[in-house]
Every structure is written in structure tokens, then in C-alpha cells.
Image: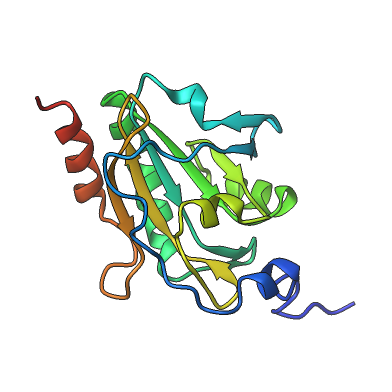
Length: 181
């Protein structure tokens, strides 16, 4: 049986995220980050954001259509984030990578990219909507939120065509600024 390049792409999730919804700035800096519970792809266990209180956390919402279709804006960012993961850990921070693919697809992505950071699966896209990342053409848009040790949003980057994802330099600089008085 021959497969099509669109296999797995046209799904209920694709249809629910097809119409464009722009990202919003309604989650102001300084606000407590909305709580969530998502499936950790590596362990199969539910992970709650509240478990990370006491340390900075980078929430990296990324755009992957299926395990075979990576967003051309997000794929290089994923590789950079994975390469810089130890730099975040050395600064006492955790990186939680959030994708909208289902568990089976997410496991393939994790293995294919050799991801070091926790990968969280959200096929319902609830956390993407909770953080108002926006959506277009079948998938939620990427965004990054840096939370301080008390769970407050201290940095936010939402998708734009000029800068689809925040650079590692900006993310690490924002993390370093958390330690300043």
C-alpha cells in the first residue's frame, strides 16, 4: 500500500486549528502562568506545571503538524533549543517543550530529534489556547513563555513572521535577568 505525503496531516486536530487566530498579548508579564496538566511523552505520566514551582521554567510551545511534517520555522528552533538545553539547566531552569501531536506521533518526534528536555503532548491544543498562542493552517502557532521560580510570566514571545521564535540569545538573556535584583 502506497502512502501519501499528507498521511496523518489531515485530521480532526488539523480541522480544529485550520482557521487563523492571531496570538494575543492578554497574558500580561507578571501574571501567574495558567496551570496545566499534560502527558510527558518519555514517561507516559501526567505532568503538572505546579510541580516546577521553585525554579524558572521555559514553556516552549512548538508547531509540528505530524511526526513527518515539521514546521519550517520551528524545526531549526527545536534543534537549537535541544542543543542549548544544558545551558538552561546550568542556570537552574527547566525547559518544557509542548507540542500538539498525539502520544504516538510525539514519541516518534522525541526519538527522531533526540530531544533531551521533557516533551509534553497536547493533541487537544488546550494549553496552546490557554496561553493564547494563536493558530493557522492546521496547527497552533509557536510561542515561548519564561516563568520565574514563583510561576509568574516574566518573558513572552509570540509568533510573528519577522521573528517566529525567540532566539536562544534572547531566551538565555531573559533567564539571566531573572537573577538580577
